[in-house]
Every structure is written in structure tokens, then in C-alpha cells.
Length: 331
Ligand code: DGY
Image 1 (cartoon, rainbow, N blue to C red):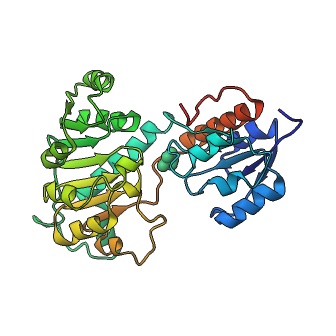
Image 2 (image 1 turned 90 degrees about the vertical axis):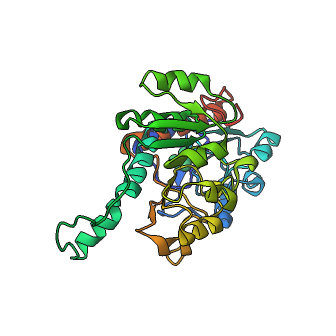
Image 3 (image 1 turned 135 degrees about the vertical axis):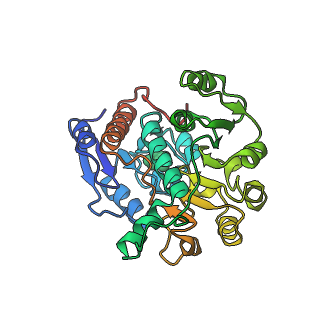
């Protein structure tokens, strides 16, 4: 690695990640809470002649960013997903790309459950009522929700996060069905240790059989709009859809229609398309009764974000040194 390579950070990050980088590099941080625009990102990378780029899911890192600095040779995203990075362009330019798999699976699964439970037991709606002074009495038919225990949980994509999500069903005595590219026997064995007998089926079966459907697939060409009108219509009209993966996996127009027409009971989302979701977006007309939403905070626990920042820094440092990345997006 050259004396002190320059690494550009598109956002301030937990201190542990900065410390790891600052030991070896000049670190320049974009100072705002909102990421630089694409044009500004290109300008900053160019002006700094950056050797490394530390980015997040909010940055689009395409060939124009990569070509902004001839020295750029390592990109690290503080995320497991890397659909915002043009991997082929990076590969063609021999720029390494690191990401943060594994570390956020449990934290993201935890948030998935927070959303599922909020949707099932209408906690946001309930909170809003109390806050607005509308708690009139104990009512036999007030704010009735769905039981979670003994219901059927459908997991779409039984990878690391999907498996963690499914594991958490154990305390609720749920039946678990899942779809995946093929049966994931290792995950099934892991779940069996928690007393969960996960049944592999087609996506269609998962949608038809489940009371709760949770999405855990990466965003790829094949998974873009994996759930459109046909799929949403297949779901039970009392079902709840949870999405902590990527907004683009669901066709937003079809989802708006599903909530409007009552094809499903509720959508509990941590991700949306677009992101950020504008305050006047049609989806929000359905909150809180049929929509619970959070702003892409699946991995947002203090411990996990700190670990993600360090992993990202380590990926960048390895790329700058020319050594093997601990977690390469090319693997
Ligand atoms: C990821 O890691 O891909 C999440 O979406 C952001 O934490």
C-alpha cells in the first residue's frame, strides 16, 4: 500500500471503523447526514484522487464514479447488499469490492419480527390512538389483530437473514414454510435444532399457505418485482407481508393496489421503492392501519453498525494492500 492512501467516506460512520482506517490512511468524510449527490460523489472522488471509497446502500457506485479517480482500487460498502454497485464495471477495472455478510443477519431478523408483530397486533395504530387522546375505554372489539402463535410463517429466501428470521418463530409454535433456489438442507438442519421443521415449497405455495410472508432474497434481475399483482393476489386476504430485504423485490404499484383492494391485510416494510419514500406517496395513505414502515434500519443496532463499519474498513484496507478481502462481493 502506498504511504498513506486516501479513502473517501460518503457518510460519517461509527468510530471503530474510522479508527481502523485512520491508522493506515488519510480519511476524508462527507460531512452531511444525507449522502452526496451522484455528481458530487464523482467530484469528490476525482478531487481527492481517492484510492479507496467507503460507501453505503444510499450511494450509486457506477463506472462514472470508478473512473473519477485513476487511483481508485478498493470499494467497501457498509452493507451486505451490493445492488447499488456496478460489480462488472469494478471487475473490469480491477477494483476490489467488499461487503458485510453475516454480521447483520440477527439484527435484521430482529427488526423483521418487530415489524411482523407491529402489523399483527396493530401497535403503531394503537400507539397513535393513545397519543391522540382516543383511548376511550377497554373495548371487546377494539384494535383486534392477528394471532402470531400457531400461525404459518412463510420465508421467501432461506439464506443467512431468512434463517435467523425463521429461527425466531420457535417461541411462537409456528409452522414454517420456505422457498429458496433449491432446498437449503443446512438451514433446515440448523432450524431443526430449534425445533422448527421448515418445509420447502414453491414461492406460490408459500404465498398461498402463509399467514405471514417475509422476504429475504437479494435484489437480482430474477428477484426484481418477484411479488407483483399475481403473487399478491395469491396471498390470503388476512395475510401480512414483511419486507426487510429490498423495496424493488415488490412491485410498489401492485402493493398499493393490494392494500387498497384488501388483497392482503397489512404490509410491514423496512424498505421501499423508492427510497426514501416521499411523505405524499400513495403507500403512506394506508398507514398505520394497513402499513407499518421504517426507513431501512434493519441493521441499525449500535453493535452491528459498529461491526459493519470495521468490516468495511478491513475490506478496503485489504483491497488497498492487494491482499485477499475478508468479504469480497465477487465471491
Ligand atoms: C444491507 O446491509 O444490505 C442493508 O440493506 C443495509 O444494512
